[in-house]
Amino acid sequence: MTTYEKIKKLFVDSLGLNEEALKPEATLDSLGLDSLDRIEFMFVLEDEFKIKIPDREVKITTIQDMVDAIDRLIVEQHAV
Image 1 (spheres, rainbow, N blue to C red):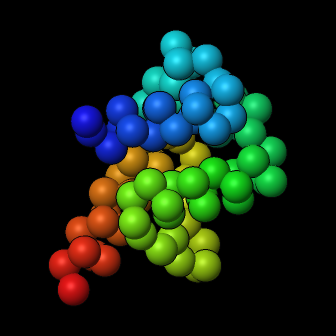
Image 2 (image 1 turned 60 degrees about the horizontal axis):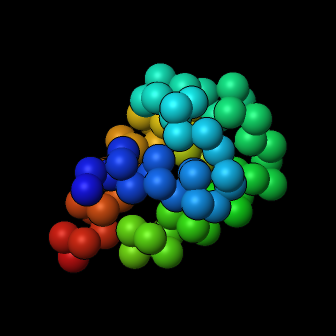
């Protein structure tokens, strides 16, 4: 399962979003995620991918941005 597929499944399972709306170019705003939803989902991502999302500002606007950031963090944190 790819990072994108895992993230889609997590959106459906955790937030009850419609899978068909979860295209790579979909923005988090267009999915109706408020700031609390985003923070809670970051914890879900950390648990699923066994990573730590840094407190520094990470610019994530779309699902593809999220996939790219997760893939980068996996490489950085699991290479140690």
